[in-house]
Length: 212
Image (tube, rainbow, N blue to C red; front, side, top):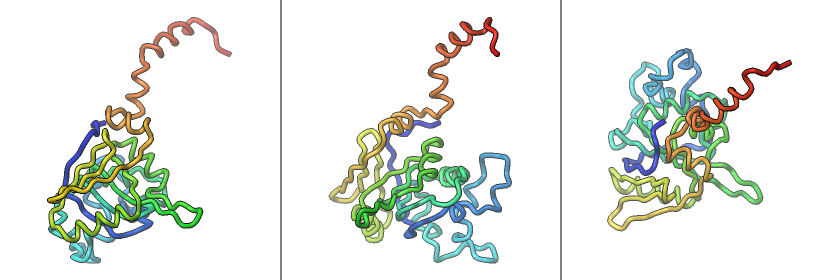
C-alpha cells in the first residue's frame, strides 16, 4: 500500500448527502474478478445519460474538476452495502482523499462516513477526513468562488489547507493507529509480516507437538 503523508491536489465537490455504495459503483459492475478497471464506472448512474453519453449536469463531468484528486462531499458518504469495490473505484479514478462533515443534531451525531466504508478506505490507502459541517460548507463556497482551487491534505500534521491568497486551514482528528498504518503504507498483511520472526519462532516451538 502506498504511504500517505501529505498530498496536494485539485478539489472537486459532490453536493450530495447519504451517497450509498450502489451510487458509487453500481451492482452490475461487480462481476469482475479483478481489482482494477472500476474507475470508468464510478458514479455511473450520475455520470452518464441513458444513451451512454456524459451527463453535463453531473459535477465531476465539469471541465474544472478534471484531474481532481481531493473529493469534498456531504455527510454519511459510503452508506449502504459493504462492497470494497466502492473504494477501489474512487482510488482508481484518482482521488487520494475524501472530505466530509459530521453533523450534530441534538444528542445525535450524523457521521461523515459509513463505518464499513471508512474501514475499507483505510485498508486500501484512501484517506477519509472528517471536518465540521461549517468547515466543509466553507470549502464548498471557496471551490465555487475560485476555479482550480487546490488543497493540501497533510496527514502527519492532520490539517487541510486551502491554497488561496490567504490560506485557510482546518484541523482534523484521526485514530492514531489508522494514521500510523496510512503514513507507513501498511495494510493488514504488511502489519502481520512485521511479526514474521515471532510467528516463525512460535511455529518452530510447536511444530513437534501433537495437537488434538
